[in-house]
Image (cartoon, rainbow over all chains, first blue to last red; front, side):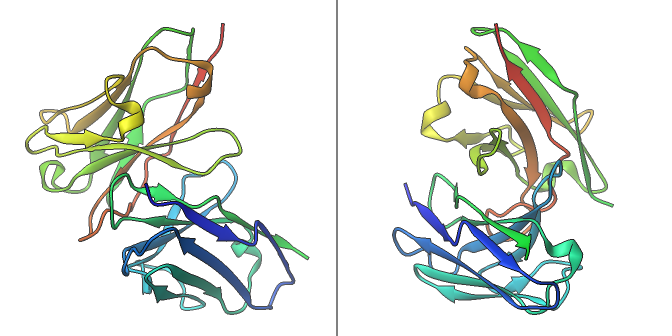
Length: 107
Length: 119
């Protein structure tokens, strides 16, 4: 199965600053990659699909890039509601797999 | 709007079975695949399998094959995930999630069902 590795595990950022999150696949997944945000006690919420397409109602401060094995999620100017855990997920091959997550916390 | 509402918390003993339901509304139930994902405490999500509500066909991850059954009742727009032979490491929040787009990514998700396996 394709192993998804996210880094860093924890990212400490001040509100208003930019955050950069990384996701690496153990083999190429093309552009078949999604990013989710999860807050405590809630289900994950889709942010990005196809590596760079924002989901409906997702603010423009969220953007994604990459293809193949290396992907990045950018949050341009962090707001208080953005402090959460972020997961990447590949859907290029079965079984579908998720990364271990990056926790974005307030610095 | 599109909504997935799941059944409530379950507590089961090792070896028992659990059946979680996922009631869909706000869209044509038979038009889109539903997936099941679980998340153990403090862990990342883990994909279980998918079902086509139209045909009842689907598939599951190899680690769950033989232990999981994904079914649906189109008369009440509800999908089900049954897991048998429960173990303590099956303790997790179980989610149903909708595949609306071209790829197998999930949007939206149900609110989750906590299944606790304990003697």
